[in-house]
Amino acid sequence: MRSSILYLILLILLSSGIARGQVSPKNTPLALEELFNRLVDNYNDSARIRINDSIRLIVGSYAKSDIVFTTRFTNLRYLGQIMSPDSLLKIITWNLVLENEPGRYFCYFIRRDSKGKENKVYNLSARYNENLIKTDTTYSIPDWYGALYYDLRPYVTDNRPCWVMLGLDYGNPNISRKIIEVLSFTPQDSIVFGRKWFSSGEGIKYRAVFEYASNAAMSLRFKSSNSIIFDHLAPFSPAKKDDHQYYGPDYSVDAYNFENGLWKLAIDVDVRNQ
Image 1 (cartoon, helix red, strand yellow):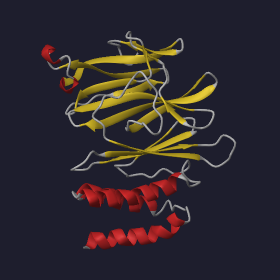
Image 2: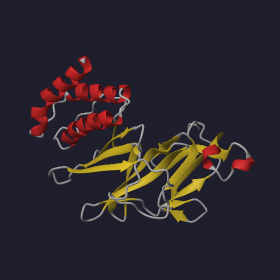
Image 3: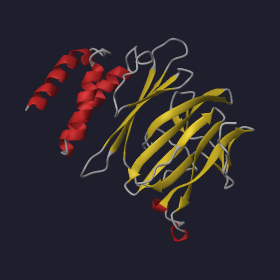
Image 4: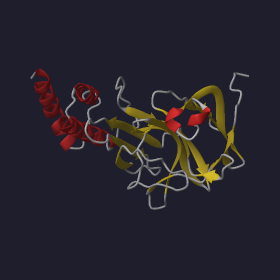
């Protein structure tokens, strides 16, 4: 009863500001923290969806506000917030876990307008999907596969800006995925995911996707702007070489290094501090 009253009070306190498109940096973290805690504590799908709808209202209002590039909410464990080093792109992501239907991803891309005009805000959502993320095609907003992005770096190619993002996907209950993705925009400001940029000896792919056992942990990170390093994945036994739910790190490290206009795969690299 007490939590229901607190939830109602938070919504009443914030509703007037949300309706006017205003977000208070002071009140928003408190409201989001309470709502995310309610998601964790509540096991009823319909209640979780209602709580998540409130989260979407608050985050959507914040994403469209004029403080989004100058304010970052701290101590929000379940809300991903990253901004590119060039301060031109901010990404806010979170996921909704459900008991009786596929979970969902929610993502806001906020692009700062270079001419000082209103920021462009892209609101994406996707259901958990067990299928493999394709590496031979681009994606757009309607067919976005869904992921949580946790790091990104800016680049310029063909005189147009793009960003390389690192992401994580829990869409398959038996397999975790990590992704190296490329984000760019068309001249009409539509989002494009993917660029034919990753050379691994098996042709040039639009993104790199790594699949491994859901109970394993894989590191994938930028070593520098020209190098992305990650754990080498191997089957737990030779008999499981065709089934990635039995893959995990084998204590060696691989990399994609940017060379001659391509991200090129390097196997078993030495990442010790020289």
